[in-house]
Amino acid sequence: MDIVNQLVASGHFRIVKEPLGFLKALEWIFAIFAFATCGSYSGEFRLSVECKNRTESAPNIRVEFEYPFRLHQVYFDVPTCTGEKARLFLIGDYSSSAEFFVTIAVFAFLYSLGATVVYFFFQAKYRENNKGPMIDFMVTVVFAFMWLVSSSAWAKGLSDVKTATDPDEIIKLIKACGNEENTCKELHDPVMSGLNTSVVFGFLNFILWAGNMWFVFKETGWTAPFMKYPQASMEKQPAPDSYGQPYSQGPGYAPQDSYGQSGGYQPDYSQQGYGQPGEYAPQSYGQGGYGQGAPTSFSNQM
Image (cartoon, rainbow, N blue to C red; front, side, top):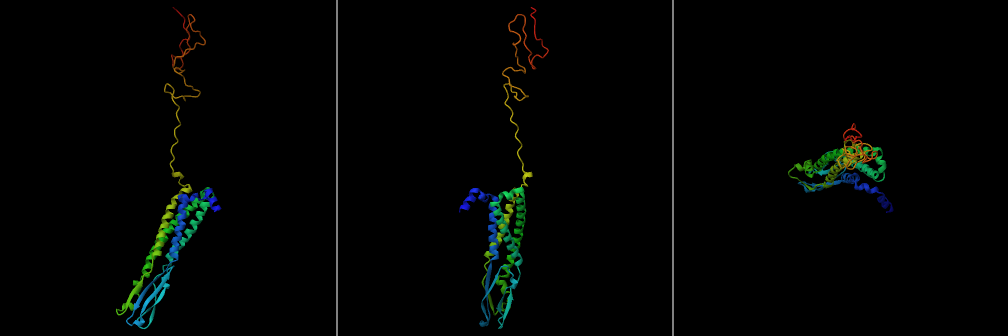
Protein backbone atom coordinates (compact mmCIF):
# COMPACT_ATOMS: atom_id res chain seq x y z
CA MET A 1 0.00 0.00 0.00
CA ASP A 2 2.86 2.37 0.74
CA ILE A 3 4.25 1.87 -2.77
CA VAL A 4 0.86 2.55 -4.33
CA ASN A 5 0.43 5.69 -2.20
CA GLN A 6 3.85 6.93 -3.25
CA LEU A 7 3.05 6.35 -6.92
CA VAL A 8 -0.24 8.18 -6.58
CA ALA A 9 1.42 11.06 -4.73
CA SER A 10 4.15 11.34 -7.37
CA GLY A 11 1.57 11.69 -10.14
CA HIS A 12 2.39 8.49 -12.03
CA PHE A 13 -1.28 7.51 -12.19
CA ARG A 14 -2.33 10.91 -13.55
CA ILE A 15 -2.03 9.45 -17.04
CA VAL A 16 -5.12 7.29 -16.32
CA LYS A 17 -7.25 10.43 -16.25
CA GLU A 18 -6.03 11.43 -19.71
CA PRO A 19 -7.60 9.92 -22.87
CA LEU A 20 -4.24 8.49 -23.97
CA GLY A 21 -3.77 6.38 -20.86
CA PHE A 22 -7.44 5.60 -20.30
CA LEU A 23 -7.98 4.24 -23.82
CA LYS A 24 -4.75 2.26 -23.66
CA ALA A 25 -5.94 0.59 -20.46
CA LEU A 26 -9.25 -0.26 -22.14
CA GLU A 27 -7.40 -1.74 -25.10
CA TRP A 28 -5.66 -4.46 -23.16
CA ILE A 29 -8.81 -5.20 -21.15
CA PHE A 30 -10.92 -5.58 -24.28
CA ALA A 31 -8.18 -7.65 -25.92
CA ILE A 32 -8.41 -10.12 -23.04
CA PHE A 33 -12.15 -10.57 -23.63
CA ALA A 34 -11.58 -10.96 -27.35
CA PHE A 35 -9.11 -13.85 -27.24
CA ALA A 36 -10.61 -15.43 -24.11
CA THR A 37 -14.12 -15.75 -25.57
CA CYS A 38 -12.78 -17.22 -28.80
CA GLY A 39 -9.73 -19.22 -27.77
CA SER A 40 -11.39 -21.01 -24.85
CA TYR A 41 -14.55 -21.99 -26.65
CA SER A 42 -15.86 -25.55 -26.76
CA GLY A 43 -19.34 -26.53 -27.81
CA GLU A 44 -21.49 -29.46 -28.76
CA PHE A 45 -24.66 -30.38 -30.54
CA ARG A 46 -26.87 -33.45 -30.22
CA LEU A 47 -29.18 -35.25 -32.60
CA SER A 48 -31.02 -38.54 -32.79
CA VAL A 49 -31.49 -41.13 -35.51
CA GLU A 50 -34.43 -43.51 -34.99
CA CYS A 51 -34.45 -46.44 -37.37
CA LYS A 52 -37.45 -48.58 -38.25
CA ASN A 53 -35.72 -51.28 -36.30
CA ARG A 54 -35.46 -49.67 -32.88
CA THR A 55 -32.48 -51.75 -31.88
CA GLU A 56 -30.36 -50.01 -34.49
CA SER A 57 -31.39 -46.51 -33.48
CA ALA A 58 -29.09 -43.91 -31.93
CA PRO A 59 -31.33 -41.73 -29.75
CA ASN A 60 -28.60 -39.39 -28.54
CA ILE A 61 -25.64 -38.66 -30.80
CA ARG A 62 -23.35 -36.13 -29.15
CA VAL A 63 -20.78 -34.22 -31.22
CA GLU A 64 -18.21 -31.94 -29.59
CA PHE A 65 -16.01 -29.36 -31.27
CA GLU A 66 -13.75 -26.57 -30.05
CA TYR A 67 -11.23 -23.91 -30.99
CA PRO A 68 -9.45 -23.73 -33.47
CA PHE A 69 -12.44 -25.22 -35.34
CA ARG A 70 -10.75 -27.76 -37.57
CA LEU A 71 -14.12 -29.32 -38.15
CA HIS A 72 -12.92 -31.67 -40.87
CA GLN A 73 -11.12 -33.57 -38.10
CA VAL A 74 -14.27 -33.94 -35.98
CA TYR A 75 -16.15 -37.17 -36.61
CA PHE A 76 -18.88 -39.28 -35.05
CA ASP A 77 -20.60 -42.58 -35.74
CA VAL A 78 -24.16 -42.75 -37.02
CA PRO A 79 -26.36 -45.77 -37.68
CA THR A 80 -27.16 -46.77 -41.23
CA CYS A 81 -30.27 -48.62 -40.13
CA THR A 82 -28.94 -51.69 -41.95
CA GLY A 83 -27.17 -53.26 -39.06
CA GLU A 84 -23.97 -51.24 -39.50
CA LYS A 85 -22.58 -47.91 -38.46
CA ALA A 86 -20.92 -45.24 -40.55
CA ARG A 87 -18.36 -42.64 -39.56
CA LEU A 88 -19.27 -39.10 -40.52
CA PHE A 89 -16.93 -36.08 -40.56
CA LEU A 90 -17.94 -32.46 -40.25
CA ILE A 91 -17.14 -30.16 -43.13
CA GLY A 92 -14.70 -27.26 -43.14
CA ASP A 93 -11.47 -25.97 -41.60
CA TYR A 94 -11.88 -22.53 -40.05
CA SER A 95 -8.74 -22.51 -37.98
CA SER A 96 -7.01 -19.83 -40.08
CA SER A 97 -9.48 -17.06 -39.34
CA ALA A 98 -9.92 -18.10 -35.71
CA GLU A 99 -6.19 -18.36 -35.00
CA PHE A 100 -5.51 -15.13 -36.84
CA PHE A 101 -8.07 -13.33 -34.68
CA VAL A 102 -6.70 -14.78 -31.44
CA THR A 103 -3.10 -14.01 -32.44
CA ILE A 104 -3.90 -10.35 -33.09
CA ALA A 105 -5.76 -10.19 -29.78
CA VAL A 106 -2.83 -11.66 -27.83
CA PHE A 107 -0.23 -9.37 -29.41
CA ALA A 108 -2.50 -6.36 -28.97
CA PHE A 109 -2.89 -7.26 -25.31
CA LEU A 110 0.85 -7.57 -24.80
CA TYR A 111 1.63 -4.31 -26.57
CA SER A 112 -1.09 -2.26 -24.90
CA LEU A 113 -0.09 -3.63 -21.50
CA GLY A 114 3.56 -2.73 -22.12
CA ALA A 115 2.58 0.73 -23.41
CA THR A 116 0.49 1.33 -20.30
CA VAL A 117 3.48 0.51 -18.10
CA VAL A 118 5.62 2.94 -20.12
CA TYR A 119 2.97 5.65 -19.75
CA PHE A 120 2.93 5.17 -15.98
CA PHE A 121 6.60 4.89 -15.14
CA PHE A 122 8.64 6.14 -18.10
CA GLN A 123 6.81 9.23 -19.33
CA ALA A 124 9.98 11.30 -19.68
CA LYS A 125 11.71 8.56 -21.66
CA TYR A 126 8.59 8.08 -23.77
CA ARG A 127 8.48 11.75 -24.81
CA GLU A 128 12.24 12.11 -25.33
CA ASN A 129 12.87 13.36 -28.89
CA ASN A 130 9.27 12.30 -29.71
CA LYS A 131 10.56 8.84 -30.68
CA GLY A 132 8.19 7.09 -28.29
CA PRO A 133 5.02 8.79 -29.59
CA MET A 134 6.08 8.26 -33.22
CA ILE A 135 6.63 4.52 -32.72
CA ASP A 136 3.46 4.29 -30.66
CA PHE A 137 1.46 6.00 -33.40
CA MET A 138 2.71 3.72 -36.15
CA VAL A 139 2.05 0.58 -34.08
CA THR A 140 -1.42 1.86 -33.19
CA VAL A 141 -2.24 2.36 -36.87
CA VAL A 142 -1.07 -1.17 -37.68
CA PHE A 143 -3.09 -2.74 -34.86
CA ALA A 144 -6.22 -0.76 -35.75
CA PHE A 145 -5.99 -2.09 -39.31
CA MET A 146 -5.28 -5.65 -38.14
CA TRP A 147 -8.22 -5.58 -35.75
CA LEU A 148 -10.51 -4.63 -38.61
CA VAL A 149 -9.16 -7.35 -40.89
CA SER A 150 -9.08 -10.11 -38.28
CA SER A 151 -12.52 -9.29 -36.89
CA SER A 152 -14.05 -9.29 -40.37
CA ALA A 153 -12.36 -12.58 -41.24
CA TRP A 154 -13.45 -14.18 -37.99
CA ALA A 155 -17.03 -12.93 -38.41
CA LYS A 156 -17.16 -14.71 -41.76
CA GLY A 157 -15.48 -17.79 -40.27
CA LEU A 158 -17.97 -17.87 -37.41
CA SER A 159 -20.85 -17.76 -39.85
CA ASP A 160 -19.41 -20.80 -41.62
CA VAL A 161 -18.87 -22.59 -38.29
CA LYS A 162 -22.51 -22.07 -37.39
CA THR A 163 -23.58 -23.55 -40.70
CA ALA A 164 -21.22 -26.52 -40.42
CA THR A 165 -22.39 -27.36 -36.89
CA ASP A 166 -26.09 -26.85 -37.45
CA PRO A 167 -27.83 -30.16 -36.61
CA ASP A 168 -30.31 -29.64 -39.44
CA GLU A 169 -27.42 -29.44 -41.91
CA ILE A 170 -25.74 -32.49 -40.36
CA ILE A 171 -28.92 -34.56 -40.73
CA LYS A 172 -28.81 -33.94 -44.50
CA LEU A 173 -25.43 -35.72 -44.58
CA ILE A 174 -26.73 -38.89 -42.90
CA LYS A 175 -27.87 -41.42 -45.47
CA ALA A 176 -30.28 -43.18 -43.11
CA CYS A 177 -32.17 -39.92 -42.65
CA GLY A 178 -33.02 -39.92 -46.34
CA ASN A 179 -35.29 -42.93 -45.79
CA GLU A 180 -38.81 -41.93 -44.83
CA GLU A 181 -39.09 -45.00 -42.58
CA ASN A 182 -36.41 -43.52 -40.31
CA THR A 183 -36.78 -40.43 -38.13
CA CYS A 184 -33.96 -37.95 -37.59
CA LYS A 185 -34.21 -34.84 -35.46
CA GLU A 186 -32.03 -32.40 -33.62
CA LEU A 187 -31.93 -32.45 -29.85
CA HIS A 188 -29.67 -29.55 -28.99
CA ASP A 189 -28.13 -26.68 -30.92
CA PRO A 190 -24.59 -25.51 -30.09
CA VAL A 191 -24.39 -22.41 -27.90
CA MET A 192 -22.61 -19.71 -29.89
CA SER A 193 -23.09 -16.73 -27.57
CA GLY A 194 -19.41 -16.78 -26.54
CA LEU A 195 -18.24 -16.71 -30.13
CA ASN A 196 -20.67 -13.91 -30.96
CA THR A 197 -19.21 -11.96 -28.06
CA SER A 198 -15.70 -12.45 -29.41
CA VAL A 199 -16.69 -10.86 -32.72
CA VAL A 200 -18.27 -7.92 -30.90
CA PHE A 201 -15.12 -7.38 -28.86
CA GLY A 202 -13.07 -7.61 -32.04
CA PHE A 203 -14.86 -4.67 -33.61
CA LEU A 204 -14.87 -2.78 -30.31
CA ASN A 205 -11.11 -3.15 -30.24
CA PHE A 206 -10.93 -1.74 -33.75
CA ILE A 207 -12.96 1.30 -32.64
CA LEU A 208 -10.73 1.76 -29.57
CA TRP A 209 -7.47 1.56 -31.48
CA ALA A 210 -8.76 3.76 -34.30
CA GLY A 211 -9.98 6.36 -31.81
CA ASN A 212 -6.73 6.28 -29.87
CA MET A 213 -4.80 7.06 -33.06
CA TRP A 214 -5.75 10.74 -32.73
CA PHE A 215 -4.54 11.09 -29.14
CA VAL A 216 -1.25 9.33 -29.93
CA PHE A 217 -0.86 11.47 -33.07
CA LYS A 218 -1.08 14.65 -30.98
CA GLU A 219 1.80 13.40 -28.84
CA THR A 220 4.08 13.09 -31.89
CA GLY A 221 4.23 16.84 -32.47
CA TRP A 222 3.34 16.40 -36.14
CA THR A 223 0.31 18.62 -35.62
CA ALA A 224 2.47 21.71 -34.96
CA PRO A 225 2.65 22.89 -38.62
CA PHE A 226 -1.13 22.75 -38.85
CA MET A 227 -1.84 24.71 -35.69
CA LYS A 228 -2.98 28.32 -36.15
CA TYR A 229 -1.58 30.65 -33.57
CA PRO A 230 -3.23 34.05 -32.90
CA GLN A 231 -1.37 37.08 -34.22
CA ALA A 232 0.68 39.03 -31.73
CA SER A 233 -1.35 41.84 -30.23
CA MET A 234 -0.38 45.35 -31.22
CA GLU A 235 1.76 47.27 -28.80
CA LYS A 236 -0.20 49.41 -26.46
CA GLN A 237 -0.33 52.97 -27.73
CA PRO A 238 0.51 55.73 -25.25
CA ALA A 239 -2.26 57.89 -23.96
CA PRO A 240 -2.66 61.22 -25.84
CA ASP A 241 -1.83 64.54 -24.27
CA SER A 242 -4.22 67.42 -23.88
CA TYR A 243 -4.04 68.15 -27.65
CA GLY A 244 -4.89 64.60 -28.68
CA GLN A 245 -1.29 63.81 -29.80
CA PRO A 246 0.47 60.80 -28.43
CA TYR A 247 3.50 61.36 -26.24
CA SER A 248 5.80 59.04 -28.16
CA GLN A 249 6.53 61.36 -31.10
CA GLY A 250 10.25 61.13 -30.69
CA PRO A 251 13.04 60.44 -28.29
CA GLY A 252 13.26 62.76 -25.37
CA TYR A 253 9.88 64.28 -26.04
CA ALA A 254 8.08 65.48 -22.96
CA PRO A 255 4.45 66.58 -22.86
CA GLN A 256 3.77 70.25 -22.35
CA ASP A 257 1.09 71.92 -20.37
CA SER A 258 -1.24 74.31 -22.16
CA TYR A 259 1.42 76.03 -24.35
CA GLY A 260 4.50 74.02 -25.34
CA GLN A 261 7.31 74.51 -27.75
CA SER A 262 5.26 73.23 -30.66
CA GLY A 263 3.03 76.16 -31.37
CA GLY A 264 2.13 77.87 -28.12
CA TYR A 265 3.10 81.43 -27.15
CA GLN A 266 5.87 81.32 -24.59
CA PRO A 267 7.87 84.56 -24.18
CA ASP A 268 11.18 84.38 -22.41
CA TYR A 269 11.93 87.20 -20.02
CA SER A 270 15.11 85.69 -18.69
CA GLN A 271 17.38 87.80 -20.89
CA GLN A 272 15.33 90.94 -21.42
CA GLY A 273 13.79 92.66 -18.54
CA TYR A 274 10.14 93.30 -18.66
CA GLY A 275 9.11 96.95 -18.45
CA GLN A 276 12.39 98.56 -19.66
CA PRO A 277 11.75 101.67 -21.73
CA GLY A 278 11.91 101.34 -25.48
CA GLU A 279 12.35 97.62 -25.85
CA TYR A 280 10.18 94.61 -25.96
CA ALA A 281 12.05 91.45 -26.95
CA PRO A 282 10.22 88.16 -26.88
CA GLN A 283 12.13 85.07 -27.85
CA SER A 284 11.36 82.90 -30.82
CA TYR A 285 7.88 81.50 -31.11
CA GLY A 286 9.01 77.98 -31.82
CA GLN A 287 8.68 75.94 -34.96
CA GLY A 288 4.97 76.39 -35.15
CA GLY A 289 4.85 80.18 -34.50
CA TYR A 290 5.60 83.17 -36.73
CA GLY A 291 8.81 81.73 -38.14
CA GLN A 292 12.47 81.92 -37.38
CA GLY A 293 13.04 85.17 -39.35
CA ALA A 294 10.99 87.40 -37.03
CA PRO A 295 12.88 90.33 -35.41
CA THR A 296 14.12 89.80 -31.92
CA SER A 297 13.73 93.42 -30.81
CA PHE A 298 11.70 96.48 -31.70
CA SER A 299 12.71 100.11 -31.18
CA ASN A 300 10.17 102.55 -29.95
CA GLN A 301 9.83 104.93 -32.95
CA MET A 302 7.01 106.83 -31.51
